[in-house]
Length: 128
Image (tube, rainbow, N blue to C red; front, side, top):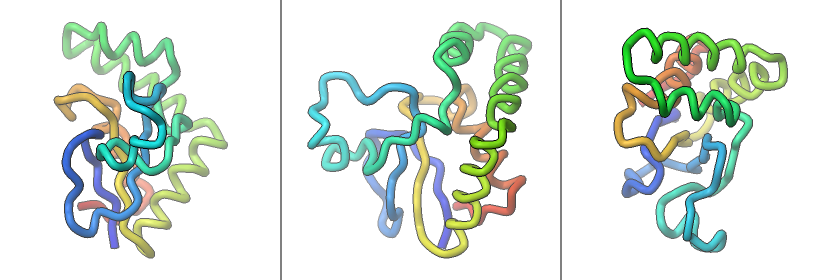
């Protein structure tokens, strides 16, 4: 059992389990009924995504310094009690079932999902 960090829209891996969209917005131009069939996500979980303003900041990050500032702010958002409990739940579930969390960004190194991976690992999640 484990949690995988994936790019939404990419082909699913065998045994991936439930795919959670940790994004602020659903995919554009895709009917809601087709999200899972097109390998986006089974369940939308915007609570694990950066706030709208922070998403814009991440997209505009042109330097390592800008990215570090984004990471710090996203970590602060995820430290809020309701979001921290969500991370704890995902980490606990990773020991009982397979699941995946993801975002649309092509480069995980410049995507909030890289920080999400770290946050889950810090909570003892089983990662793949």
